[in-house]
Length: 97
Picture 1 (cartoon, rainbow, N blue to C red):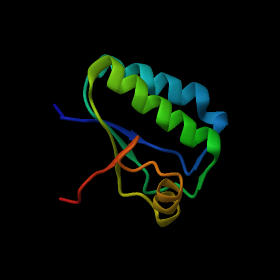
Picture 2: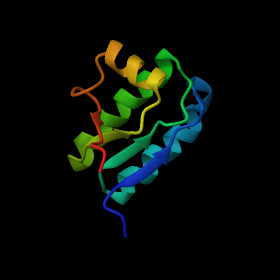
Picture 3: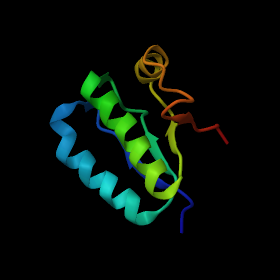
Picture 4: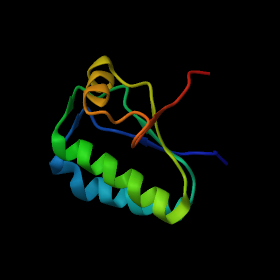
């Protein structure tokens, strides 16, 4: 049994993934664990994807008070999260173990 609900984000994460991500959100809420978004393969994120991640954080906190973590972000993904001011506000960087 893992202490986190892990989600591998697609290489190109955008609004077209809304239904898939909504399903992930529902599963994560049921799992009632902190969520880890694995972003190592992400080469593209649009503003809708950033909004979905922020919304995921808000929903997760309101239902279970669990956190949303990002692990192994690609350089592109990390830079975008920094520019969008996501770290500390909506997501936390998973420490490398």
